[in-house]
Length: 389
Image (cartoon, rainbow, N blue to C red; front, side, top):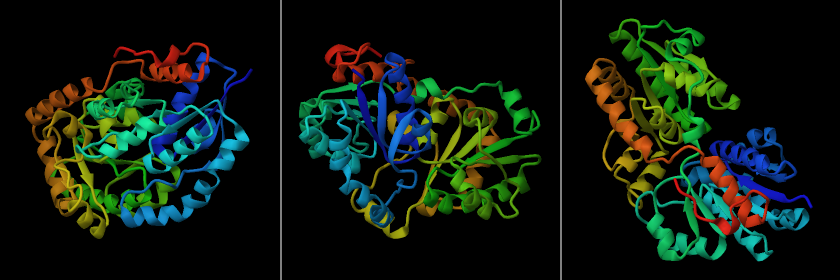
């Protein structure tokens, strides 16, 4: 009898990771049926979508409230979706608040839950979160080497599988081939600008990056700048802020794009994971709504925000956040890195040490087999048998 898997991803990165897992599970059992909530990547992977979450991504209190007006009607339909589809397994992917609501509903209906990209505490808080996971989720699959002690203390069944980007973040060309592909001279200093995958991130960071490019261009002869567009709907916003700055736009072969660059100025998020795995010097940037930033500093106030720095426990890459995230400071850091082979080599070596902590190859295969085991699918690890990284 065909097994049905229900998946939910709430933003671009989750949509990508869910699509990879769906393909990996289908390699175990080609007859599997997938249904759920997500975006174009999941649809391309053969997931029948009941709702589109492409625009759900947000950061901040006010931004989240606005997005909530869009998400709420879907949240109200969750129980009806589960009852209608009658899945054999529910796989929430990241997107904690919405997906924990969905997980509680699934659990109440007797549907097993395997959380892919299960929540972690970045800054040492969230005890109740792990207790809720222990009570609701049958197996949590962690992509980052964080909060393992919290899961264990709560009695939550979990596995650290490593980050899927360990398998995915690989260029298909040499650096010289990539430069030819993107129309960049072999010896030109090349700066990659990655302003994020959410509209509000692009709106706040792209003007900073574009002006920084103008400053660097005036001081570094022959420097080239390319902004990477993470999703088609961001194209107009990116180009609006470039104006007359010497910045081109790329939208494909992201790992070849990163490989071609000498330094990346990027938004804190998934791109920092990718850059770490590729050993790329980077400048991590972020800006929130001023009121959101004020509240965050009086609640969370993290000492650092970039994954490479958090995992290393020190600043292996500079961070420019909020008031520090201005064109002059971004340009200053870009010039500093471009001007010193010693700085680039040291940063690359430190970042590669971080990459080694993100797991070993075969992440998606491990995740697929563990999830399949919980649902009793052929090829799965029985009962979520422990794996070794």
